[in-house]
Image (cartoon, rainbow, N blue to C red; front, side, top):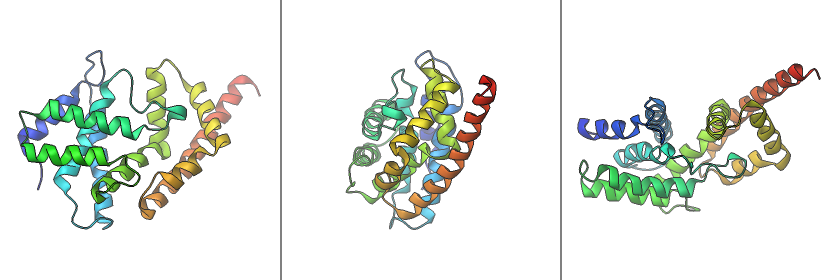
Length: 215
């Protein structure tokens, strides 16, 4: 059952402001829609029996609500997404944002879904699906661009991005993420393919920086 027009408009309105400076833009709305499309793709893989697609769709929008804040819940060591903080903040912000626009039953279902998502493993199958979809965001060229956006908001730039990529490889960061970050093997395989592409781009970026430095 698709979301009704009023609820969709309210969610889009809540994400129209992308930061604490009241800057307006499409970034968070686009991210919510993209996450929802990714979840739909995973649903079509039949990883979960009888998923609650309405709650999953609202959760995809809610997961962007914390990203408007100055201190991002995803800004952990080496850029690792802090899924627990992000999901818990999303549940709180969802209730305060939609208290007058959605029925209590739907909000309760979505809040439970969000709270379950960071658990290892979540009791709800839908929460495992959502967790895999969110964690997939860190992989691939999309992950690189997202990290660059985060670094830029902190005052850093391309040099810090390349340094971060190098540190991840040194510490075996991605291997650990692949092992522990996914509940479903088909999603893990998607992440591996995306990681291979991201590594190619990161290496090309590092090579260009070396050229600029005369190395």
